Length: 242
Image (cartoon, rainbow, N blue to C red; front, top):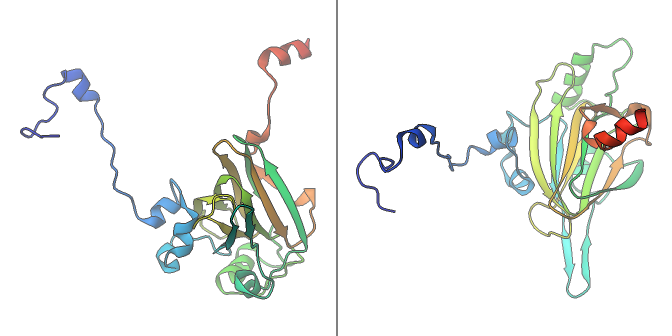
């Protein structure tokens, strides 16, 4: 389109010009997007970790997964190998495995598990020692999660709510095995990090996740989880209340 002169909008009415705005299509730095609008998970695992240090939540890990396509038959997706990779480095192998299906257009509100604080210790000091100075982790004393997505596409948001830590946010998008590509990743979430998941698109999402402890409802803290409540129509509720 040819630009004539400096005022390219002079052919519009003054009121329309006053109301105009334009979108900035320049992409902000990856770290800024990770802590804001969100990024593709594949961009995170392929990035230089140091470039994301300002927004990376201590204790969170993310690793790429391998999906093997079997032509005319389907695919085979590897979850993790006990003695290799990130889980081996963390010395974390789940005590319990589970699956979950999320219907299209649904979300799981923020969940958080309580971090273990030894008796008599200051919470902030104890947590900083473990998560910033590579201290020992007792996986039997607190719930760690490792999550895999085998179908669908999801949006995930993490927020650090541990005592003594900045409230960093990590916002990213993961593809299930049936969408083979760089966004097939797994995520390790430590206790004290609130996490929410929302299904993208029109297909259900299926996840497999491992936890360092057995499922215990009392340790499933929820924050802003009203998105999970499907309210009855107002007219129904009024009728039932009569």
